Image (tube, rainbow, N blue to C red):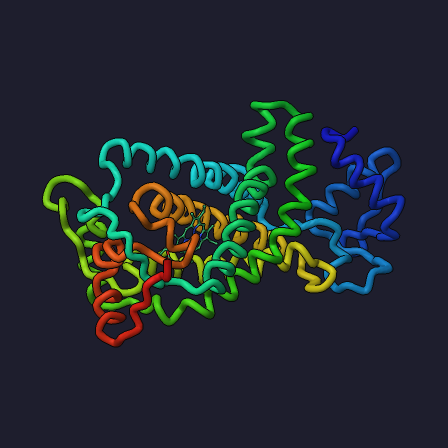
Length: 328
Ligand code: HEM
């Protein structure tokens, strides 16, 4: 009778356990033999019934909101996250193969300048490590059914999903803490300035050929690209956190069925943006900018790196006497 075992299970569940007496406007009068099908149709159309639950949204058993929204998740967002991760890696590998990295023109000076405090380095990794785990486990949960299962089979996918789910849930908490601390503590250094436009005009001086070659645009403590990443992280980190909380604690927030679905889509959309930016950010820090990675390891950067990439900041700390070298 049922084209799909999930439907049958849902109907059985509703009949046996929910105590939900469905009535299509109180008018459903099931015929013998087709009552379960009629009941299922009513559920699909969003019919409301009576329940022992006190939650105002629970009389409606499933979400009957525009079903195209679910297609967006399955047909677009799931592939979008996959593309954001592997597509951006492919683009960057290709870019570095063609363009090369950004070398320090005068080489390493060996003199290390104070840039980030120990607390800054700690909150960076408090947010960054969970963020990477959230992206990988989120990929399994969002795209696994459509991408991993056809490639590796149902067994492998369900084993991965069983691990991904709790890791994703638990990593949400340190990520949000890292996000909050970075957003509040670092915002003052990320205010856009007029010279940021010139930075974008020459792609930060990272292009090694044509009219861009050898250009070193002005930058303060953060350059324009870092500011863009920072504010994207603040905004989409907020979206991913708020929607994630709605999904993680439905008993606390008691969302409607429709709000849950909107939260799911917004969560995936914001995650795609954070993922794409993260890949660019990681490539810039680890491969593209020679000497850049040291900033988030020791908190110090080479003096020549500071002069080449953050000249206005270097001039400022030199002028106001706050330039501090690492003691050997
Ligand atoms: C392996 C992964 C990562 C590495 C190697 C890395 C490295 C770095 C480095 C070296 C900096 C300092 C740049 C500077 O001093 O100018 C930095 C800054 C920053 N990182 Fe990461 N990071 C990683 C992952 C992440 C992730 C996943 C997030 C998001 C949670 C993140 C968020 C930030 C933010 C917001 C900044 C400040 C803005 C900026 O300077 O770009 N990082 N990171």
